[in-house]
Image 1 (cartoon, helix red, strand yellow):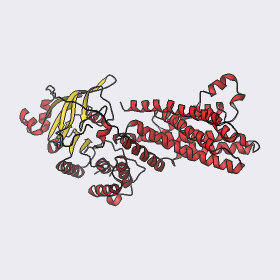
Image 2 (image 1 turned 90 degrees about the horizontal axis):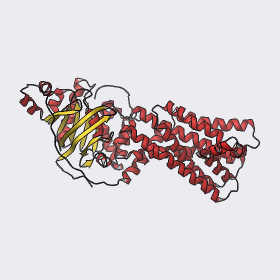
Image 3 (image 1 turned 90 degrees about the vertical axis):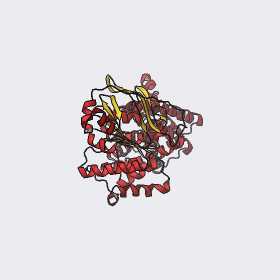
Image 4 (image 1 turned 45 degrees about the horizontal axis):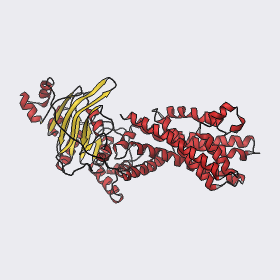
Length: 358
Length: 145
């Protein structure tokens, strides 16, 4: 069923050129025959087919022309009939064996200019986000790291000392964004890397940057939803009155920055658990250094400098401003720095991911 | 625009070469595939067949040489070509989390099949492949077409 569905998926957009890599491997005789019939039908409909196989009888039955490839070199290109005739063989297999001692043949080509397809890319980004929301956001790793963990922290702080809890609210919202976005990235990127389905996305007419951007925006949306829940919960529960435009101005770039940080770390490993483990390093360092539990200004100078190299500091800072009566300038600066982090993280993430497909 | 409808040559490769580190996987191959033909790449395992497909479908960049697919350069314009090509990899890359019909609908979305046609097209393919009765399930590993 899986093989049939994989072929069906490759035909969904009526392609005029179909690549089939070892299509009949693992199929029984009947299934292989119905696949060959399908290939003949597609050919009659004018579809060009490029297939690889190491079954020579299959190639003899199906192919108009074949290239014989050994150790990365093409030894001969011709029709099966001509190959058999020229080597005086009665089967393609005999011909193949005789030919595997001949020299290469060469031909010529040229090229053309470019075209921008931002609409394809936008569409791709949109549907990748939708699919990720449907398939991944309720998986155990995103629930445990993205929802359970921040909720537990918030409850722990609250139960320990409900008095003065308001002061912790900005830090806890920032932490929620950090954990939910990065947890989401580990799931949406590493599940797909492991399953090989990221390759499926890259075969579609969408650029690699758009695929990754879709993943990062999806993670950011997950972070927005989680932080909205935390924010609304604490604002209503504690009767706080934050400046809502400021909150939005900080939460959006924070989600983007942390989501792209998640993507950057996740594309460098393969498995989901490796990604979660690697992510814990910046997560925990930032929780302690960036003003979530104790103010940055109360730390030794050297740690303060360190704190200002980390995005969480600006998220916490910006959120604190949103809950106090700060000037819009200060909030704007935090937002801009967070956007800067987003760009600093997403560019190498794209680079790393494209390295995987070199 | 690189793409010309009805052009005779669909794939052109010239000295296409791929090194994985020190290992030479594909060694200066040149060939043309013409419109409407079934073109076979024959060879033992490790001959470079899959590497060639990966280069022609944009999953891997050639170390040397060049190729065009449907008139589009595989290094700079492959995204445009992908609109018109279908790929069946050796190992399935579908989503186990999605049902058969949802896998096809997702692909239809990615490839920009018009909304009004997606479901009809997906159901038609499921019928052709005899999967229509099981469209809402996705039984994981099973053999056979």
